Length: 275
Image (cartoon, rainbow, N blue to C red; front, side, top):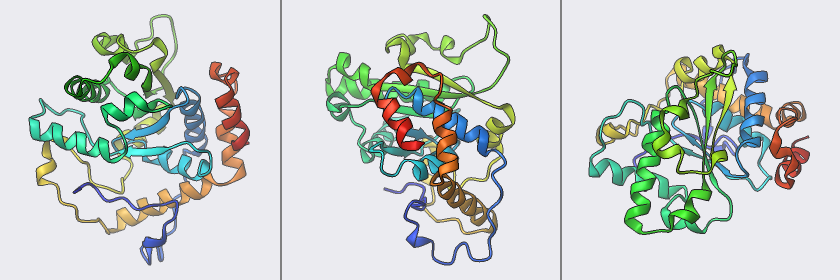
């Protein structure tokens, strides 16, 4: 499919000389990213993680290095639904093709053993709302069993950290029409320090162009090789390498301490492998 090309950074044989003369920038955000990644894993419900869009590519890279032999599947669904209007049938077909390419179809959801856990930065929750609507319509068309599938869908929103109080606003409160159709534990949040959240969501140079679903027909599949992209590639490769280190794996594992799911065998096993 004509989708944004992104290098395989776990086995980066195809990089060639792209990084010659490029020094990877220091990941000043590493402690916060590792902590957030550990909590995302802990709140994933033992699901296979699917990172939506590009905002959390750095978390995808870090965990790709940290979890190569854990049996946990990490995937990217690189479409952007933020700010998009109503999707026409061609856009919907395109979204379904991209989801099917990573094993997400109504039939597969109904029959899989573990949930699919979608992860993205969240501001007001519009991307997750549109993604759920896409899946919901598809499931209805295929006449798959919703009671079985509802237990296989989870959404983890990475939110900007604020002061907590009994009156703290949560994005899912604005979307009860679909969040209430899932189990109470299926829509959860992990907070990230404001500066780091803004870097990933607004300022970081990404390896690929944004893939707005409503503009996919005009998308160019050309691979970017400019200096900013080479710097971003060096940053991403460095994160994969850091994820392989004992120090960072322990940081991810320690972030799970105190999480309710640590009472469950799957998370204790995962934590043990990381530490």
